Image (cartoon, rainbow, N blue to C red; front, side, top):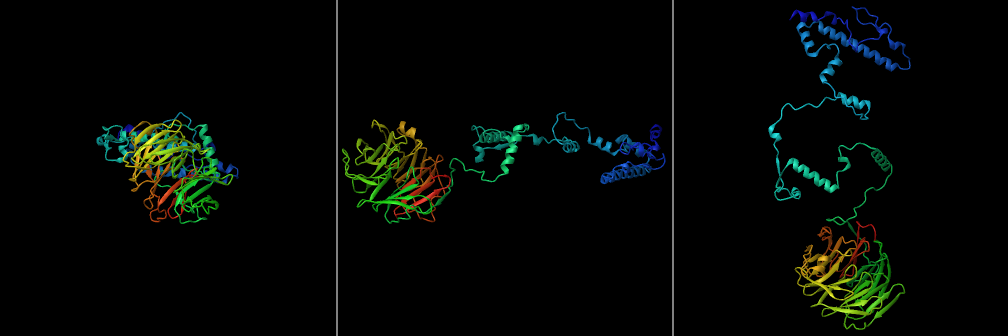
Amino acid sequence: MPPERRSRTRPDRRAGARPDRKTRMRPDDRAAGPDGPLQKAAPSFQRKSPARPRAAAAVVAAEEERRLRQRNRQTLEEGKPAVERCLEELVFGDVVDDEDALLRRLRGPRVQVQEDSGDSEVENEAKDNFPPQKKPVWLDEEDEDEEMVDMMNNRFRKDMMKNASENKLSKDELQKRLKEEFQHAMGGVPAWAETNKRKTSSDDESEEDEDDLLQRTGNFISTSTSLPKGILKMKHCQQANAERPTTARISSVQFHPRAQVVMVAGLDNAVSLFQVDGKTNPKIQSIYLEKFPIFKACFSANGEEVLATSTHSKVLYVYDMLAGKLIPVHQVRGLKEKIVRSFEVSPDGSFLLINGVAGYFHLLSMKTKELLGSMKINGRIAASTFSSDSKKVYASSGDGDVYVWDVNSRKCLNRFVDEGSLYGLSIATSRNGQYVACGSNCGVVNIYNQDSCLQEANPKPIKAIMNLVTGVTSLTFNPTTEILAIASEKMKEAVRLVHLPSCTVFSNFPVVKKKNISLVYTMDFSPRSGYFALGNEKGKALMYRLHHYSDF
């Protein structure tokens, strides 16, 4: 060891002649000689107020620990050779007796942040004590190579391809594409995903609102406004005609347009009205028509009248609900039909459409029951219906064609072929004027866009529903145009509910194991889609509560 290095090793450092910063005492504590241990002549804690004994005890314990650590360090250094002490001084510097300074040097310099983060002193101290992030010692070149992800073999990733050439994407590109899909679905970047968002006064207000929200009870989860597809939540209620049971076939079931009332009519010559409550459904009134098995009964648009036709008569019965009078219409001037069966009432309540024979159908005034005009199609007329605005008539013929007529001019606007149909059996239009549904003898229901039906001779259906295998005899849209009910009277349990606009069938209806529906002849939805009713050949008017809709 060089002599100049040995001379730098001062022995008085081991004796504790130069106290460090942590063991440096106050002037009133320095009462010890240079060779003896440190003594406290007049400890300050003895002069403190007796109101803080715990703080004084802590100060005494800290001072005792410092003296003990210094004494142990001096004892360890007495036996060290001069070479070892020299190396420690070269490596650790001139702070071997100051452990706090040594720890600060080992941690390295801290970067001072100029911004006022607003954190507490405890948080700032914790951040200062946290070690800095270290750089990696070495990098693997294979990690930097971009791994390609196959997009074609995954059905979820296939939808994210913008063109056919993107059959493979890197992980970064795939992550970027997933972020775009998420933001598109969420309508933008959510607030919780914004990393640079600073806390503002509005955030404080929102937190206060959340506190107020958690201080009260209630149902904070509301149902979606649109009907979800897949499973329709529904409940089987008491039969609508439970207080007037019958074994005759139910030919008509219809809900009143303005009151919570349902009408049930059948081949037992009676029209009955029931109050709808889903539990007992008490009977309001029954009208008996002698020797008049009812083929169809229907409310007027304003709900003030009930119209009824028979299976073998040309008489049209009109029951005035306000006056309580039954008015038979024996003969309509100019109408030469021998039997009046099928008819339709326009949504605005102005017209009555009667389907005749040999392709004729007749337009009557709903108010006076007078004939306004007749229209004819080729072949036999199978079914007819009004458009939602009552300005057009859709008529399905026996040869598979559909005719569109203007009500005011009584001229044919268009004629198109129902795709795949040999002859039609039923037709219906939606309340919002968007869809036309055509049912054929082979069990297929084609759903068309109304605009294409008015302009094209061979429109393509939006969807062909093929869940029935026998002729579709009944079609009904619900008022919100979210459900299309289809049924066939040729096979038991042949009824389905179709979700719109997805055009998929609800999987939980009907319940095949129960088999309580039998042959369906008529169907209807309540004015706000809260209830769904159907009538079968056993004289039962089955009723279901649709839970998605809160009102009747």
